[in-house]
Length: 222
Image (cartoon, rainbow, N blue to C red; front, side):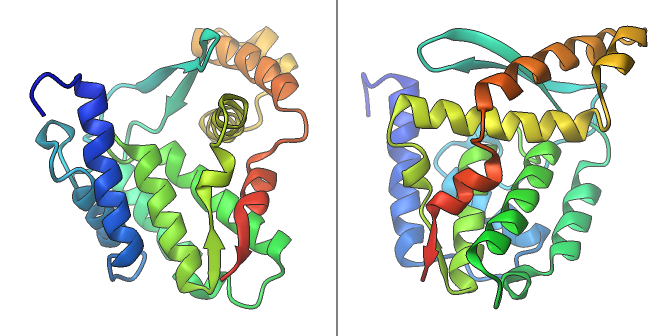
C-alpha cells in the first residue's frame, strides 16, 4: 500500500479483518482472553497498535474527542490502574451469552449497553478499543441468537456523533460516579470540575439517544 495515507491503510486492513470475522468469529468464552484475541486478530497487521496487549498502569489516561464536522468537543477519562483486573471482573460478572438468553430486546440492549460502557471505561488497549468492542459485542450477541448490527449506528455523521456522545457520557459517569453540579462547584479537583461541564453539555446534546437506545435500534433477533 505504498503511497496510501496511514489512516486509510489502517482502515482498509482492519476492515478486511472484520470481514473475515463475520464469516469465522473467534471461538472463546467471552472472557479477557477472548477480548484480547479479538483485538489481536483485528490489528495483527498493525504491530504499532500492540495487538492483544492490555495497557499498563499509568497516572492517567484520557482522550480529547473531536466530533465529526465540529472539531474538538470534550475530554474523556478512562481507567488507568488495574485495567486487566477490571476487565476480568466485568466479563466474569456478565457471564457470557447466557446473560442475554431469553431476554426481551429492551432488556438485552440494557445489558449490552452496561457491558459496553464498563469495557469502554476500562479501555483495555493502546489503540483500537472501539472497533474491538463493537466486534466483541457483535460476536457475543450472535452467540446468544441476536444480531447486533453496529452499521445501523454509524451510517451518517450525525449517527456516529450520537454514538460517540452516548458512549462518552457512560464512560465519564463511571470515571466520576455521582458527579453533580453541587460537587463540581465545591471540588478542588480540576479534572472533576471540567468533567462536570463536559457531562452537562453532552447530556444536552444526547437528548434521548442513550447508549441503550442506540444499541436497541441496532439489535434484531438472529
